[in-house]
Length: 311
Image 1: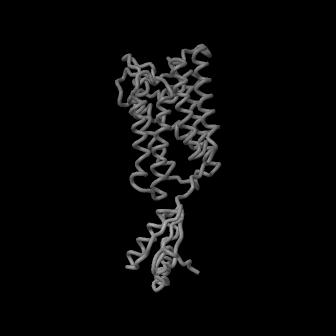
Image 2: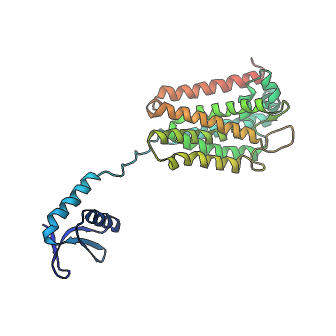
Image 3: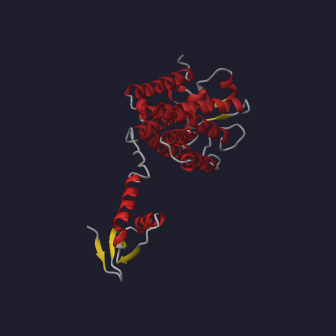
C-alpha cells in the first residue's frame, strides 16, 4: 500500500522511494510525459516521488509499465572468456629466444649464427626463405634481447588469454615470419636485420586484429570497436620508431628497422583477424591449439637446420 506523505496540503501518496537520483529523475520524466503532477521530497539520502491520491493508481500504472518495458536495458555485455592463464606462452617465447641467444654467443656447432641466420633481403629474395624465421630468434646484445622479451612476453600473455596458448604462439610466429618476408621484399637488397621485434609487434597487431573482430561480433559501438587499433597504432608509433628499441644489424647503420615493425604489426593484424573469424568455439579445440604449436616448432627447427647446413 503506498505511504501517505504529510508534505503540505493536500496529502500526497508516495508511489516510489529511491536512493538513486538518476532513478528518481527517470521516474519524474515518466510522470511528466504522462502529464501527471507530482512532488519530489528528499529526506537524507531517501528520495520520495508522491502524487495526489486521485491519480495515484494511474501514476503507478505508468511507472510500472515503463519499468517492465525497460527491464534488462541496457543489455548486459557478455563476460570476457579467457582460454588460458597466459603463463605458458610467454615462458616458451622467452625461453626460446634466450636459449638461441646463448647458442649464438657461444658460436655453437662452430657456426656464426648471425651470419647464417640474419634476415638478409637479397638472400631471402634468392630463395633462402628460412632466414625470415631464424632472424626472429637472434639478437644483437643483451639489451636488445631483454627489451624484446619484456614486451614480447606482455603482448603474448594477453593474446594467450584471449585465444589460447597454441593459437597465440602460432599467430605471433606467423606474424613475425610474414613481417620479415614482406620487409625483405620492400627493402634494399643489402638490408639485413635480426631480432624478435617483428614478432613482438606482430603480437601487438594480433591483439588489435582479434579485438577488432571480436568486438564487432559482440556488437559494441563504433568508438569502442575502433579503440584497439587506434591504441595499437599509437604504441607502434611510440615504440616502433624509438631510438635503440631494435638494434638489429642493418647495413646502413640505423638502429631501428621501422619497416620490419610495421610489417610485423600489419601481418599480426591479419593473423588476429583470422583468429577472430575462427571464433571461440574453434579456438577451444585442443587439436587446433596443439597443431599450431607443433607446426610452428617444426618450421622453426627445419629453418635452423637449413641455416646450419643440416639439410
